[in-house]
Length: 117
Image 1 (cartoon, helix red, strand yellow):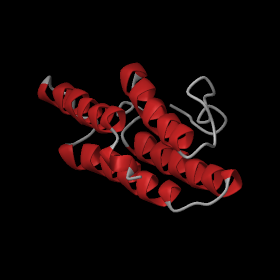
Image 2: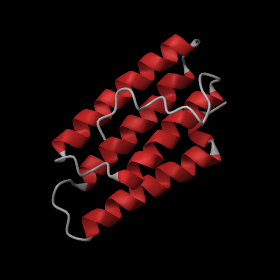
Image 3: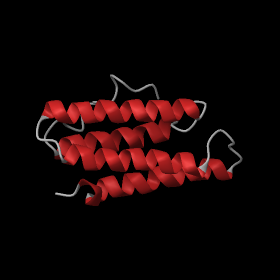
Image 4: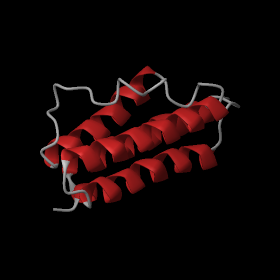
């Protein structure tokens, strides 16, 4: 199973990037296209890393590490990169991958414990 090829995840990643870039086009100067690319890269690496895990414990460590990276990026961007809509899309991507690995369900927000966005 290739998590990056999951239709839901692919669509959420596309929508996330589009919404972040749309905000830039409306005059936002708090973050750049490079920051958007970093966010998508963090999530892409997350999908690759969680797919290589073999236990829920390993998977949760990957999730935690990913959330911390996103927290740092969002802080660098004046806490504007990840707004409500983006938060939901990012959480859905992370949770869906966890569900596909049989580590969680879509009803369990496994990001909430560590996220600052």
